[in-house]
Length: 394
Image (cartoon, rainbow, N blue to C red; front, side, top):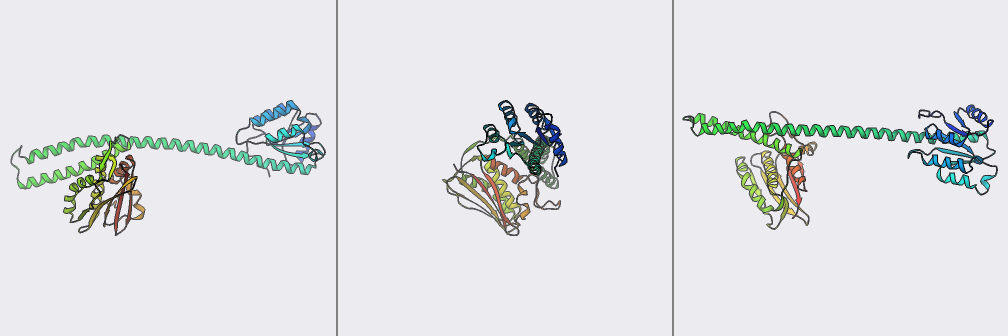
């Protein structure tokens, strides 16, 4: 059964230049359930081909004298990329046992041609035509699939553009809100400090302790807001990098000085393994420091009392590797990719002991990639985690 879903008016276009040929051809094909249209000359047939109404062409050899042959060749050449309309040429008796005529050979070289030697049985002709129509239907299916693919791609591009616009709007909103929130927080810190200094009168010990709690809360909230602001800057592409040759050993020493009190307060052993002073990385000094502080602070935060945190470095000819390891709770397999996404916490319960909004690792990885490196993790639940920062070697 021929699939006629393709948008065409006829299945077979028959070149029938004489009045007797046209009705005879239509009658024969109709008997076999094949729709056919007859055309008095090649120009009319080619116009039908251009209108996308033809499933196959049937033409006699003697009709291929120079002018109509060239018209057929031009029409075949003008087909779209998906189209290769089948052409069935009825040759003269004994033609295929001799040298093929030049007109047939020229068309056969440039078209999808099947040759049938006359006299040809009707059943054979019908079989060939049905095979040609099935091949033509596959061409229409390819065209329809290409159109559907094009539409899907256009929809995907439109959705991507909308998502990017929404992401930019979100980042811009975060940046503006973070900036606006810092102003009243700074005022809170300033007034609390003035009160603590006794500018507005004597302060009792109880009041002083209350002020310290206010200041601690203000610093914590300001840290969260700064994290959101940093992330928003990265998202909107407003981060500038100043790559220089940085001594990894010096970066280790600076980071250790800042996090050692935090580790001591948690009862943790902090081990900074010596790094070869000649190992240099090409990085933005401040952003490298920010990544190291994020990694060490996270390791300390998620390691229980009495645990240990280590930081070490190694290098090859092209890259420097900085590893921060802990023996804390570890990260479940399903979370090891998600932790690098913004606002993701391994433990998202409201009752969790560890505070933060889940931006530190997202920011750290984006900064690492912005400097031509990357940040990865290996972890086992109940054993600990190792974060590896990879950066170009200077």
